[in-house]
Image (cartoon, rainbow, N blue to C red; front, side, top):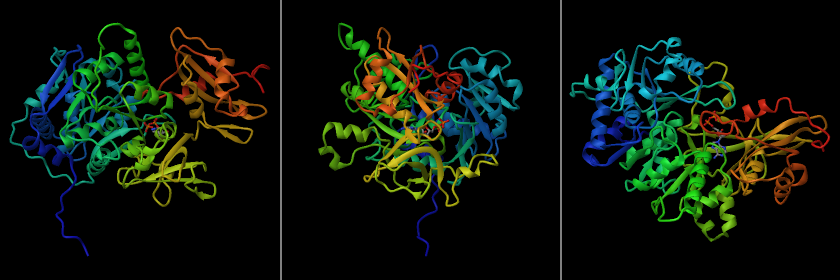
Length: 546
Ligand code: ADP
């Protein structure tokens, strides 16, 4: 027997329509390219997002058509996040850190019809515009003069007459699209439904996850061009919290200026961004005079995308910026797992609590996790390694137009993540490594992530990357690439002894190579692919071999 409830779809239009009557006056703040701040109200945002929807409809947008964005995080990008899907279209965020050739491939593969682009990103667009077939390009000038031949985003909005009603979308209709960042292969497109975005936002906001409320001041610090900025824009607009966007000024002092001036209480970023923030805070603490930045007392940071070192969590705690770790992927909208403590853990010792917080965490409600190894599903014992599988209402069931990728899903409908993990008896997932990054030495596995996280706890180490290098006797052995902090020194022997406090001798890197910087992917993660290329001609000399 069916329930007798209304057929009321979970859509972004429903979120938008709450604004005029519920929280019209809440502020949205964006950093402009010249460093100034743009402020407007939710009501202004609502009117402009609706004008965008109408204007796109007038321009011939059909249901399911893709509208690409090539933008930093700011209010016009937010308008596209909501205006495009509310007109029945799909907002396709382009990652501005990709190579122009890859961007051309992605635009063509997605069959984008229109593009919204920042004027400051026109030089990038110029590099691939002849390789793509876009019907119209709208330039966001943010108060500046446009080149004469260009069509402006403001003109597009002014073509709206104001008597427009959003079309009804079904909750399973596509609303947004994002390509994976290709850390481990070619980019593939994921299409997010309205329903997935909304259920993700609801689960993200739960007290056992980020405990978000209208009282929060949310900062979309993770790029809006990757994995929905971790979902924060949808969460903020759904709940009506003040929203802050940093534009293109992503240096730590500029971020801290906004944390302080806007009294931000919630922000999402990858570990490297948090590490930069910590460094800026540590530097500022050495200066004489009044504190440069005041962090809001309720502040908490969301960290994910790659494992977070315990040393970073401890040091940011001490400065009033506690981090909560999440695990997710472009394919999971992105948050699937979140590491908050259970009530009985509050009684545990500080060290034990940190050990839980640096695990990736428990699956959010409706997200299921399992670890699978050669003999089937692994027990939840915290030690048995296998591949992490996930399923749930905001996990992708396929890639966009990508025949041959079906084996990413199991016959019983789970997404194979490519991550090697354990799950403990409390339900906490711990990622050991990506399958490709685990080091196989003499038949035993070594986690590159564990070594990296331990290395950055050394006071002289700024960043570390550990990779497997082929070895004639042991199959593979770990080599560590290390970036030292400015003015700090350390020798390979010192680092080896430091690691030996926590690791067995056979797990220690055989060589330490000091570099000026490490390669990163377009989303700020350490690029193991690049690092492996750099070490492709590695020769074990006698001193290095064991
Ligand atoms: P890409 O795979 O191209 O890097 P994604 O941003 O989708 O693009 O990355 C998803 C992957 O990032 C996961 O499969 C996992 O390997 C890694 N990841 C995400 N969050 C964490 C985390 N908290 N700890 C460790 N790894 C993480």
